[in-house]
Length: 549
Ligand code: MFK
Image 1 (cartoon, rainbow, N blue to C red):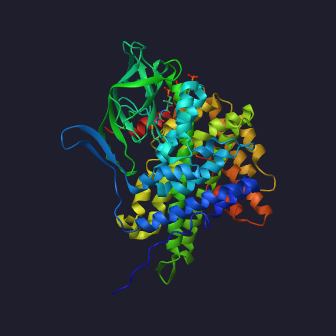
Image 2 (cartoon, helix red, strand yellow):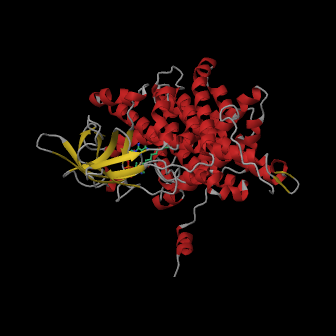
Image 3 (cartoon, rainbow, N blue to C red):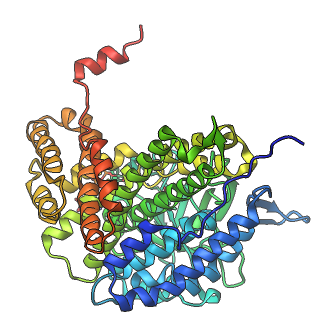
C-alpha cells in the first residue's frame, strides 16, 4: 500500500485553547474561575468525545413523520443523538441558567458563554434553541408580565432536564425575514376572549420548543411594525400532543445546520397570550434579538476555533516539498494571520458577553449601556463574516482533503454560512448599528474606546486614526440617508475592528504583565491587516457598475 496521510486530531478544546484560558484568567476572579472550571472541563471532554464518535460516521438528520399508519396527523420529529443529549447537558452545566444567575461582578454572562463556546460545535446547533430560549427569558423579563414570568421562567432556566422547556422565536414569514413589518400572521380573539393565531411562519429555526415568542397582527390593527403584537404560545397540550391549530408542514432542506429541525408551520387557531398590550411587537421582541445575536457571535467564534485547531494540527502532520506544512514560511504565516483575526474577534465577542452581564446586573452606567448596544450588532455582523472566511481558509489549508465530505471539514464551512444570515444579515446589522448610534456623533463611542486602550500597548494611534476617519465620514453622510445606508457596512466593519483591537489590547496588556507576549503579537498582526473598511461607491459609480445593458 502507498502513503496514507494521518488526518487532523482535535486537541483538548479547553487545555489547548490559550485564547479562552487567557481571557478567563484575566477577566474572572479566582473563586469564579474555580467554580466555572468543572463545567468547562466536562463540556470540553464532551466535545472531544463527540468529535471522536463522529469520525467516519455519516451525519444523522432529523426526520419528520407527518402521519401515523392509521392516517392520524402526528408531526413527529426524530432527533439526532446529539440533540437527544442536549437537555441533560444544558441543565447539568448551566448553559441557560448560569446566564441568569446573580453575580455581584456581573460576570454571569461571560461564564455562561464560555460554556456555550465549548459546547457549540459538538451540540450540532442545539445551541440555536438554547439561544432562543435565553432570548425569550430575557424578553419576558423585560415585559414584566408576572403571570408569564411565573409560568415560563422556571422552566426555561431549569436545572433539571425533566422540567426544562425550550422556546422558539417565530418571526420570519414569506413576506419578510428582515422586514418584519410586513408580517401577515393574524391574531384575533374568539368568543371566549382567547387570542388565536392564523397564518404561516416560514422559518421556525427549531420547532422542538415547548413554547415560543412570536409576532402577529391583531385583526384590524393596521399595517406596519408598530401594529404587530408579541405573543407567547405553548406548543404542546398536557398529553404531549401538538396543540390544536399548529401543524408542521415540512422541515427545511438547508445548506448547513442540517441537524437542526427548522420547520415551516401553519397556524390555524393556535391559542396565544399577548405579552403586554398587543402592539409595539418589534420593540417588545428586540431584547430577544440582542441575546440571540450575542449567541450567534460566540457560536461563530466556536466554529472558527474548531476549524483553526484542526488546520493547525494538520499542519504538524502533513509533509510537502520536504518539510512539514507548519515549517513552511507561507503556510505558517497564513495560519498566524487567521489566528490573529480570530483572537481579535474573540476579544470582541467575549467583551460583548461581559458587558451584557454588567448591563443586566445593573453595574453599567448610561454610557456603557449605549456602547454595549452598539457593540452587539457589530460583534454579530463581523464574527458572522469572519467565520465563513476562516472556515473556508482552514479547509484550503487541508488541501483536497478539506473538500471531502467524510473528513467532516466541509460541514464546518456549510454550517458557518448561517452566521451572517440568521438573526439579521450583515446589512441589516449594519443598519442596526446606525440605529444604535442614534445620530451623527461618534465621539461618545470613540471616547469610550480610547479610554479602554492601555497606555503600555502600542497601536492606539492606528485605532484613533481609523475612528477619526469613520467620524469624518459619518458627519456629512448623516445628512443624506442614501449615502449613509450605502456606507453602513464599511463603517460597521471599521468600528468592529477598532473595538476588537481595543479589547485585544487590554488582553495583551494583562497577559504581558504575566510575561505572556502572544496576545501582543496577535494584536500587531491584526493591526497590520488594517482597521479601516470604509469603501462605499458613490451612487453614480454604483449605477455604472450595476448597469448591464
Ligand atoms: C447558534 C447561534 C444561534 C443563534 C440563534 C439563531 C436563531 C435563528 C432564528 C432566526 O433567524 S429568527 C429571525 C431573525 N430575524 C431578525 O433578526 C430580523 C431582522 N430584522 C431586523 O433586525 C430589523 O432591524 C427589525 C425587524 C428589528 C426592525 O426593523 P424596522 O421595522 O425598521 O424597525 P424600527 O421601526 O426601526 O424599530 C422598531 C422598534 O424596535 C424601535 O423602538 P421604538 O419603537 O421604541 O422606537 C427600535 O429602536 C427597536 N429596535 C429595533 N432593533 C432593536 C431595537 N431595540 C433594541 N435592540 C435592537 N436590536
